[in-house]
Every structure is written in C-alpha cells, then in structure tokens.
Amino acid sequence: MTTPNLSTTIKPTWCPGCYNFQIFAAFKNHIEKEIKRGKRKDDFAMVTGIGCHAKIYDYVNLNGINSLHGRGLPTALGMKVGNPKLNIFGFAGDGDAYCEGIEHLIHAARYNVDMTFIVHNNQVFALTVGQPTAVTEIGFADKTTPRGVANPPLNPIELMISLRASFVARVFADVKQIEDVLKEASKHRGFKFIEIIQPCIIFHPDVNYKKHTYFLKDKKHNPKNLDSAIKRAREFDYNKLAPKTRIPLGVFYVEKKATFEEKIK
Image (cartoon, rainbow, N blue to C red; front, top):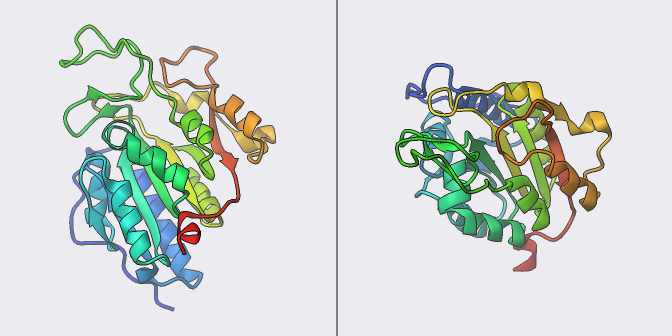
C-alpha cells in the first residue's frame, strides 16, 4: 500500500525553533504509521481551535475543521456523532482548552467521547503576544498583568483524573515521547487527553523543564490506580520550578468504560 502524502504546500510560519514543529512531526509520523498498519487516510479527521497550535491544520493533509476559539471539542463531538467510525484528533492550546473551552473539556471527559484531544501547553496566549492563561504560574508579568499573576494555576492533569477521563497522559514536546503516547492512546476507546509541555521560545521560554521530568513507567506506576494517579498528578502544580520539582510524564490514568457513542445507540 502506498502511503498518502500528508504534507501540504503551505510553508509553516511558526517561529524558528518552536516546539510546535516537534508536535507536527510526531503527529504526521503517527498517522503515516497507522496507514501502513492498514488504516485509510479518510479514517482520520482533525479539529483545531485558535492559537499557534491551530496552524497545524494548514500543514497536515487530512479532512477536518479549523474551529472557533475554545470550540474544538463540541465541533469534534458533532463530527463523531455524524460518523462514529472516524478517528478524530482535536488540537488546542492551553488558552483554548483551559480558558475559553474549559466547559467543553469538562463535559467531553464526562461523556467519554472516543477521540484524542491534544493540548499544546506553553502557559501563555502566545498568538496574541503572551498574555497569561489559566495555567500560568504565579508572578508571571506581562503588559496586561504588570503586577504579576496573583491566582494559582489550574492543574489540568488532576482535573481530568478527578473527572475520571478514561485516558490521561502528559509528555514533553519531544517527537519520540509524543509518538509513543499516541501509539498507547490508539489502543484505547474513549476520551484520550494528552497534554504536551511545550515552552514558548518567545513569551514563555524554557526554564529547563525537561531536566525536572521523569517517566511514570520507570517508577512502575499503575495507571489503573486512581489514588496513585491523583498523587502523581499533584507532584507538579504548574507554578515556578523549585530545585526539587519533579514533573511526571507518561500515562497517569486509564479506565475502561462505555463511550459516548455506545451510550447513545
């Protein structure tokens, strides 16, 4: 079988060195491998919101919809209801997912929609020059918050586990890490929530996040253990990194249960 060309003729306009290139490469590689395993290109569709992440829609030659800010998930749900056989990938930024779209995220997790939702988390609204989001650390200052962020950030991993989202994972913006977690997610039926830590090289530069990370599998973490998953999720609270901060990566939680599509048959 000839692998379809998943590239488009549009030249990427992300900043040179942007971690979005890593996410783009990993996603494209994953779809190509799925097609080589027997899937068809038309078995996949993608939905994006508004933000730097959303440019991926222009660079991957797949069917889909470039949606409104924060509205990618209800758009994906509509697509899934229309064609339950589609393998849908939703892409969002942290502003998109945790600010404008937080209500949709909560209910998509509750409903257990069978789709993969990927959040590009750089902890700022990068497309609109770096305003804080719901996961920006206390003390971060920009022109809109010159005195610094005063409210503590959300912990999206803990939130998703508390809602019993059926697949919850976090990785760094590294091609291999992303490919590995997408492969794991492809084995699961239900709502697959994957957060990718990707520092913005302009408005929220890398503060050596990768040095603070470790892999849950190396600690023999059991993703079916809810209490353990919550405990691991609380190890990193999305605030400023202290010398002893540890950031777990990998699959935090997995639960097998009926999907939204199965429940409405």
